[in-house]
Length: 507
Image 1 (cartoon, rainbow, N blue to C red):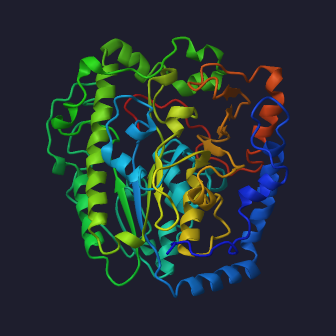
Image 2: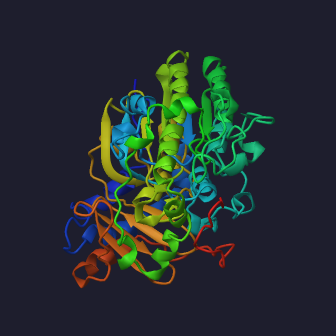
Image 3: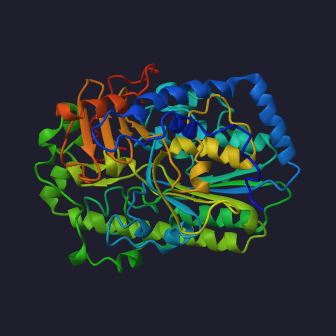
């Protein structure tokens, strides 16, 4: 039986479909007038007002009560820190080796163009878990103290706990494993464990890897052990199990055995253009921060060594994900468990002379996003539509038959889980810092900085974003259409004076 059951009348026609029906055409596929890009966001914002209507919420609650008579779906919620799209099945880097992530993707739907809400750990996770975008909360950067901004009780786990689930969490779900205890039934105590095995942060990156550690020296090993135990003994309540893995976050320093598959002499650099920054506005050049990591790698000659370390660390994470999948396969709840795997953002390794996250281009904003929903998704599904992580909150609520709260700002992707090639009128939006935004459709990326600087890339012809078209008047209507998705009202940053450039060794 489908986990979703008959959900067609719960929220009416999906908002994306309502917007689509306004004209029936897709995103601006050329530089013709982009009707949908301009009018779809207005239709969606208007329709979203219905979420807060008490009458509709009462209907939704009644529907959930009826659905509750059946077995509620369990949820395995896998969060991975700093994992970009260097996974084998996406083919973005030819040397990536991630058989277990690929095995999970083969069971359901993998989103080929999935993007974060914010390319930084703390605000990305705060946005996903609260359902609120940074321009609504004011949580734009690491250090913005999400627990002082977002009200207790709004977290995704709280919705499931209130609905009768056992909400269990382990590892890095929120930044630094912070959390409101009231939103969880239990959370793993990681006292005495080391997130990175005690390896200094720059080893394997700017410095040679001197230490050798064991799998179990990294806390991720024990986080997975803890989650395996919950899968083996799920209890009487439906289970919401959140497993947060720290790796491949710096230091890129897994046990040395993971390096064997990646000989240094064979390592390939990502696509790179020396003059790539020449057509960027000043804000984009500052965000690239070429004077930081890029300059240092030119001096120390460790660019390929750093890529090797990243690939090896991803292989370590893939091993732990494999352990988790194997445990689910042996679990008594295997046939009634939704699995969602997401990276909190991407990671640049030299594209645009930029390293790490903290920027609005393709590499720092794009990450793996995989869903397996028994009875709904089909094996081997690949979705080319652009989606972002704000979809997680409403999608899980819909799949579990829970009301979507009015403050949740994302769009459910259930229509795309049913049919990965379904029409879709909603772009992905990423934000980094106060009033710096990126809008990504299937064919375009538009970036607008707080000072008015712009970038525009036509992706089918320019997948590496090497040719900024923002100054070309031919594409003025495309920019107008994409700009229409940006917020008109924003919460002020808690740190307006925070620098755009992230210093080497920081965060």
